[in-house]
Image (tube, rainbow, N blue to C red; front, side, top):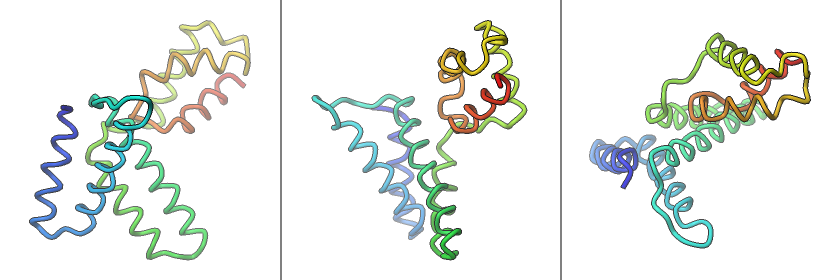
Length: 152
């Protein structure tokens, strides 16, 4: 079993005992998402820590997008709840990359693939090199925007 999944279960028990509603409901939700990912497909499988980080990243992204949507709709209370859940999930994700670090990784990938003169046609090649390096540590949209900026 994945160490991260064990940590999530242990922290859920602690949150329930401490009567921390936000933390316990968020951890329940993410453990359910992990279980759903394990049984999805033709056969059930045990997720690795990398797979669990992928599920956490997806759930964290959903929370950020929902908070933005609630803000735009004028529902500050719901937006704040989504941000609180995102903060709980962020505790379990690897340290996120800053804009400078993303820009450096993109320029290294462009250099390594020789995509500097190819323009936007080389985006897939550059993203293919970058994805393993930034998985779980940066939002794919932010990385793609930086690749477009450097190639375009």
